[in-house]
Image (cartoon, rainbow, N blue to C red):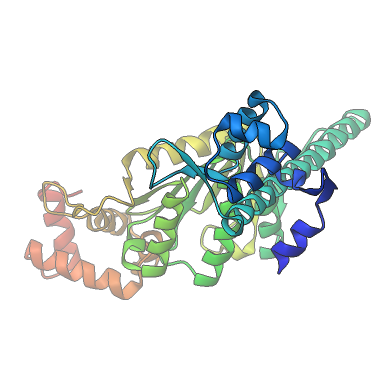
Length: 346
C-alpha cells in the first residue's frame, strides 16, 4: 500500500501515458518498456517505427532500462533481454529511489553538522577561544548522544575496543542500527572484542554480522579499557575503566589521540579475526586466555579484576586456574606461579 501511494503521488501525464520520471524513467524509456511488455517480436528498428522515434533513441532507452534493471537476460533465448514484470521492476525502482533519498538525507545532515562546525570555529576565533581538547561527558545518555554525533560525522574509520565479554542483546540491536548507517556511508570499521565473546552466541552473532556488512572484527585475550576512535582524530575513553557509567572523556589533543591509537594498533596486530575458528594454543599448549590469566594474576590482580579484563566471571577464572594448577602439578597458586615461571609460561 505504501509503495502504491508513493508511485501515485509522483507520476505525471505525458504522451498519453504515465511517465515515471521520478523513478528514473524518461518518456521514451517508459514507452519502450510498455511496448516490450506487450510485444516480444520487435527488433530495434521495429520498436522505433512503432513509437515514431529514431533507432538511436530506442538504443538509449534500452540502455536506460537495463541500468534500472527493468531488462534482464532471457533464460529462454540466450543473448536477448526480456522485460521484468512491473510488479517486480517498479518495486525495485522504488527501493532504489528510497535508498537514494536516504543517502541524500545523510548528506544533508552531514552538511548541517559541517555548517555548525564552521560557525563554531568562526565564533571561537572571534572570541579568542579555542576548542577544548578534553570534553567530559556525564551519564549514559550524554555518552550515547556523543557516540551518535561522532558516528554521523565520521568519514574514514571508526576503531573500537569492546571489552566486557558478552554484550547486552538490547544494546546490540541499538548498536546494529548505528553500525549500518556508518557502513552504509562507506566508513571503515575495525572492532576488537574479547576471546570470551566466542562462547556467547548473541555476541558472536553480532561480531559475525559486523563482518557481513564489511567491518573487520578481531578478538584478543584481554583488553585494557573500552574506547572508540573516530577518524584518528577524536577518542572516547571512560573516566573510570571499572565503571563506564560514571562518564567518558572525548579527547581531541593530537598527542593523546596518537598514543591511544598506537595502543589500539598494537592490540590489533596481535589479535585474531573472529572468523578464525582454529584452536588458539601456543607451543606450550596454552590458550591466549590462559597465558593472559597467568600474567594478570602474577601482577597481583584479584580473580574479579582479572575476570573483568578477560570478560569472564570470577568463577570461570577460578575454574581455569584450577586446570592450570593441575597441568603444572601445583598444590597452591604460589607454587603454580613458580612452576609457570620455570616453564617460561610467563
